[in-house]
Image (tube, rainbow, N blue to C red; front, side, top):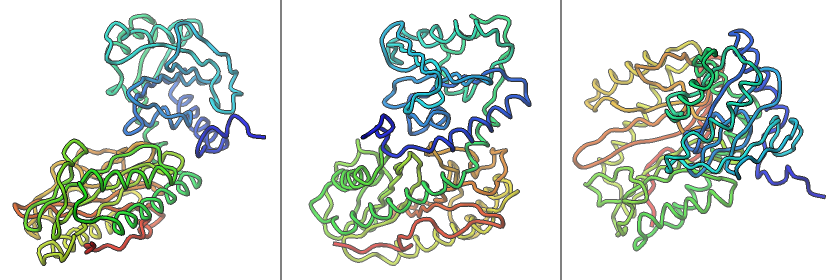
Amino acid sequence: MSGPNDRITTPISTGELERRWAAARKEMRDRGIDALVMQNNSDWLGGYVKWFTDIPATNGYPKTVVFHADEPMTMVEMGGFNTVRNLKGADPVHRGIGELMGSPSFLCVNYTDNYHADTIVPGLKKRGYKTIGWVGPGSLPHAFIMRVKDSLPGTKFVDATEFVDRLKAIKSEEEIGLIKRCCEMQDAIFAKVAANIKPGMRDIDVTALAEHEGRVRGSEQGIFLGSSAPVGQPARFAPRHFQGRTLQKGDHLVLLIENNGPGGYYAEIARTLVLGKASNELVDGFEAMREAQDYTLSLMKPGAHPRDIANAHDDYMRKHGFEIEIRLYAHSQGYDMVERPMIRADETMPIEENMHFAVHPGYNTSTMWSTICDNYMVGATGVGGCLHKTEKKIFEVG
């Protein structure tokens, strides 16, 4: 007989959720925080709700969670006015959730801006909390924050994001296993694309093939960036809106596969495919970025500071005549495509064992865009082997 938990395509174990809850509550006790409040509306860059509940926020619909220090969570999700289910923390799908409440609110409809706040405020008042911690306040709607604060004038509000980010970034054995499954899935996706890409396909046909292969292998969400160009012109990453070009013989396409795998964990892989013969410039550019990737990996050890690695990478790029990084070329991943720590000069979180990173250096010229991307786990003394098994080369196909 099937049970309610069978509805989840790849559930995280209840034991793993309990590990997370215990770790968060310890940090809350140490800081005198009575409850954490978070809200997400996307499972691309909205992993807080997923980390606490194993339920993603999706499609721009807000999902609010109150994580209480001493009792099951409160969740507000899309639903009818004044709907409340008392689950007592025992529901096999909404694990750890006590109150499941509905709110028919939409971020694009301004008069519903206060609905989520008005739904959780009575419970917060009843409990008489002294200190509440925001999780990710920069991504919380301004109206939501102001309504909660104005409704609880005697309550102290603090930013709890720092310790939650660190807890999310250090992966458990179960999480590492799911990350490895994601990378295996992405290797299979790339192999499918390499075996089927051909002249006459549009760029969007290539990325649609990649997305389909991922979905049937357990992925729920992600992005697939790529554009084609004749060899001698740059083929930069582009989203679907700009993937209308038709591939011709001799063209090349730089493809990024950045989707989540079974269980919702993200990784990403990028390679260059050529429908014919790769130019020496393409091969040399790819090899240069492979070496730049190796250099960064050699610096990534527990205790290392991202700012030092980022500055060393810029020095390396200058020394070899390449442009320095001005956005982001390496970062942790988990339930978010990009999570802390980022390898950047403004990052303050040091690298620790069991963190998971994507490393993707790249550079532009007037005739080429070159990059490589793969994922790695940080071990006790440095990074382990590459989690992707796809060969690090230019792929000549078609």
